[in-house]
Length: 186
Image (cartoon, rainbow, N blue to C red; front, side, top):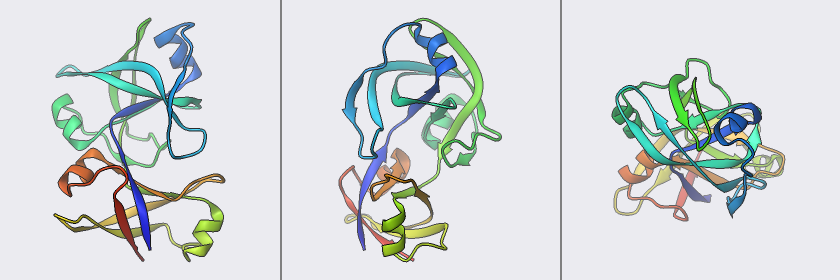
């Protein structure tokens, strides 16, 4: 089966407490809806920083979450001089420490991860695809530079829409962009 690819650049999710420190009373406004229902790119940007480097213009995604999480690529890790774990969103054990700079304040916390490859879907899609007892699959990607990507985690949410999320490193290595198609292998 074919599935659309969504390429995820570095970004940040914020909890309310950290949002208030970073932005005070500035309102989080939607600039663009993302494919997954309720998720959006906001009007706000932060800087992320380590003792080695700073990356500017990191997009804040909404809505506000119960945790703060910075999602970066392995290439970003080299620049920043950190080695965060590969994790599913919200799994922050062993996350790397990073400083986040907003327009009103600064926080430093262990919240930087490299997001794992994952397939968004809802329960009925999961059943239709025969993935009810499967946690990970493989996908075939690319036209000019094909590859089989293993360890693609299944991420079921009640309103999820079928979409494969890859970070910029996976996408660039295989000449992929958002909207390209992948083939599920399981």
